[in-house]
Length: 380
Ligand SMILES: Nc1ncnc2c1ncn2[C@@H]1O[C@H](COP(=O)(O)OP(=O)(O)OP(=O)(O)O)[C@@H](O)[C@H]1O
Ligand SMILES: [Mg+2]
Image (cartoon, rainbow, N blue to C red; front, side):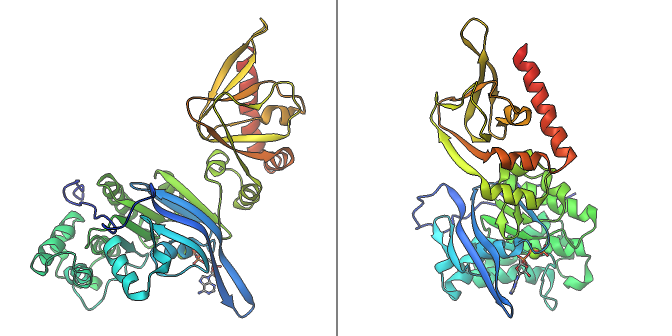
């Protein structure tokens, strides 16, 4: 088994030490559009993508083939440029960098890992790992070989250091490629299908290595087709037709197709309520369905003595407002923003919600089951 990365093994560089840090987010995409010119006209590969990733997050990027995953991560690494929009990494607008400074910046700050390892075939494994050090000059030249050997040791490849890439297995080449990506101790790792060409045991081993790197302070974005792996990371970003699906909606209703989730994402209305404010009122006719995206809300029903009692606390990722829509009745409960901070919700119009629920028996069953439990709990 590979050695675990410890905090002292891999320290994280600050991206651009002199750069001011007005943002909390490490990576920020603002309304990024990427259009490709094709013989049959413009093709929109990214359709206004807005995304933030915080320091230390491990994010899986999923979506069907052609949904825009590689295009999106190529924007973050600066391998490709947006047609419009902004990409900020630690506050630095990377899309404005010219070719030379971009390559230097990338070399120091982002370790890039591809599906097909892309090691140089005529260089040894060790020389492949040293190469980015020679380019960026983060480490003293006299130290480079020792640092490279140390990295290879950590991915359990030290004994293969003097072989050519063609002389080791695919899993071993990918481990070498990870050591190479770590050569300049970048704070961010971006991997495009790093396990796509590996058997499942090697894939799991690479995945565990990524987890250890996140524990040591790295931020990782990993494109994957492997849903099992994606489920085991902190956060999943799903692309469909060049757009990011609403993360909360996708998590709560994983049984919906990407097409339906995309339609719903486009119709979502973000709303904010201050603590104590009413979001829905018992007795009203239902007009919307809600999903909590930040903060906390209380569900209140009459207690029989002319007062109200709290029957549930709703947290981020929970939904409400479905019962009256499903039953064609008036609202049975009042929901208020509670807690100390404002509550963010996303709302969907009643008809949109109806369409989602009616789209599959699995969806109908899941939502009805929750609604039945809630009605029972409120009447106790
Ligand atoms: N250089 C290009 N010119 C024209 N269209 C392109 C170009 N690069 C990508 N595309 C198109 O943009 C869309 C998104 O491509 P992208 O490579 O980002 O998809 P992906 O989600 O990474 O797919 P996969 O899972 O197959 O790797 C695709 O329809 C693709 O055909
Ligand atoms: Mg791709």
